[in-house]
Image (cartoon, rainbow, N blue to C red; front, side):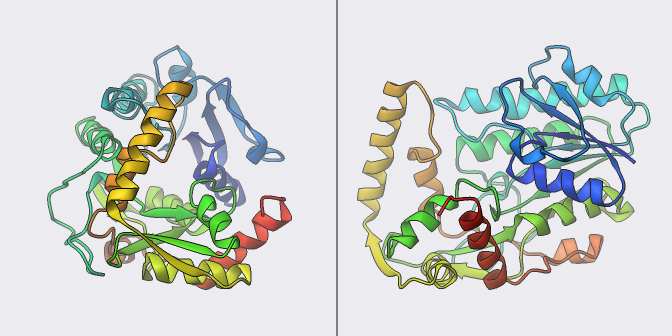
Length: 325
């Protein structure tokens, strides 16, 4: 099969490209002209330089493909409109290009986010699958809007919602590995919140299986590991993988909220939005982010095969081998 991967040069996208190539598929990547292609070195992919703004590259990118895996998007911005412009409007341009120029398309796979569904009610209980989405943040709302665009596109689609994704090449959760290495395990608030996670190579396998499974057509599916942990449990597991002792530091919610507002101001002064912001604080202080893997098991026959402790150890090894830790 011939697959287009938008954002294939990124953290998750590069794992997917490797998985597709290993399975014998032809891969084309749409990446911005400024994107770093280091993670694709040695991968026999066809490269199209462009973005989702409708600069003419989309028609070239989708021409003749059988599958589209849409991973490109914006995680941060100064305003909600910044994320909507990329995540909603960019997705609309891509689906329109597929309608006009990809007549042989058999599946459009949107890699969305658990943020589009919204948080779970608390504890370690997953939100029921049919619960209407209730996104909290600009990012979550923009990803939900992208889902609606795909659902209304007339294309054969599958929507996937991963939770926290970690693994080799990740820079977001990596910051917690750095803090844990120093012996500190900061925990937001005074109560433990529960989280689902998924290891990036496992996620890549699930994404590919979603494109191939007839039962996944027109479905929205969580792709998550089976283990649910509190933030303090995750911190202790990361410390164990690092071979250090971690000390839990409870951070008052008002302190985290203040830090988020300061981060907003600093980012504006620098002219560059950052991952940590008041929007990220909203996610951090939500009751829980727990997803059920049951539907992926039923429709895809997929379950994340790598136990959490092993996945964390593999991640630490990669960080050390590449001089990150």
